[in-house]
Amino acid sequence: MNKIQEIPFKDIEKFIDIVADAYPGLQISAAEAKKRVKERWRKRRQDKRMSWWGMYRGSEMLGGMIYYDYTMNFFGHKVLTGGAGTVAVSLVHKKEHVARDLMRFFFRHYRKRGAPLAVLWPFRPDFYKKMGCGLGWKMDQYRLTPATLPRTKARKHVRHLGKADMKALNDCYNRFVDTRTGMIEETQVNRNIRYDLGKGVKYVGYVKDGRVLGYLIFTFARGNPENFVDNHIKIEEMVYESPEVLNGLLSFLHTQADQINRIIVSSNDEYFYHCFDDPRNETGNLMSPVYHESHRSGVGIMYRVLNTREVFNLLKDRDFDGVSVRLRLKVHDTFLKENNGDLTIHFVKGHPQIKTGRAAAEVSLGLDIADFSSLIMGAVDLRSLYNYGRAELSKATYLEPLNQLFATKQKPVCMTSF
Image 1 (cartoon, rainbow, N blue to C red):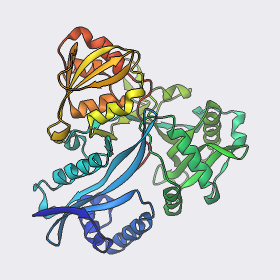
Image 2 (image 1 turned 90 degrees about the horizontal axis):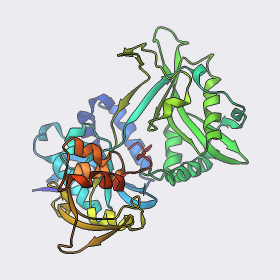
Image 3 (image 1 turned 90 degrees about the vertical axis):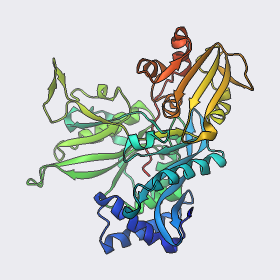
Image 4 (image 1 turned 45 degrees about the horizontal axis):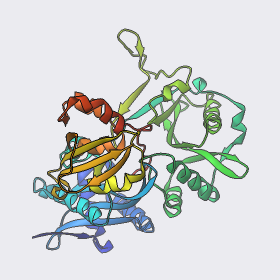
């Protein structure tokens, strides 16, 4: 009989062995590398949001994962959200549904604790989509020449940041969280741990009147390995609270042109390329007829609704764009059957009211839990899901009102690695 339980730290080396085999690209198979991982996890235990869980058969560990008790901004509501990380299965126990059972247990663990949502970074999106996880918003990565970035007088407020600035930096980050759906709060404990563990990581901030109003966290990356002066700056985290602050940070990067070949920066902002006079990357590629390659895009963060009813209870004060409609929502959730079923919601001037029993409805909307998770987070619109055959409407004439109802002004953003 398999049992899932929290891993005592005396067993952590068993889990590290499994992770080393499951993710050989991490290059932690050597004894010294495993020792470093153990020490890093020992330090990270100070962050009480983290816990390590394993599936056991007797004393043998079959697989495991890390849980994160996150607080996420969900349209202005700070909600408990389960973060799933480092899911790993022993090589000799593949195809025994270990990962599936670990994930179902994880979802139910957080649902029982009242979390309406879970988040994860997928090693394969299709694997987790089968478990009901929906794709989040895409990320675009730009490789820009420093000279193409704007240069303004706002750069005078940019300076290096050190350990003593981490509280002000983290306060800035958490203020940014307050303005973006999908953002996860950061604790001061974990911010300090990240600073201490970050080798070769640079911090600069926009500081005015003693407050950090924006910052860059970056590393240097080699360009041509045969040319030691060919280097790039890779931005790991960028936060800014106003256009002036953004321009100050970009001006700082502009001034690195004598030393730096490319600025590598990723953004969830679909309009970000309008910041630059020349957003082209170094490939020189053209798409027909004359579209210059400017960036590459990727999908990453995935969201999972654990309790559809609770989602709408949370959003009872949200205005769904003033739309009035009596909707029967049919969510198909075969992986988490307690979340499967119909929900009748009457939207009155945009405000949802959940009805009991077989209350009257004008239109029914049916979709898989994965697509619903993407929809409710604002990562996709209903019109697209309907056009792709991923949403069913009992009356097609309701497509535009319902598309308006679920539309969001901002795409979800996540800057937390886990």
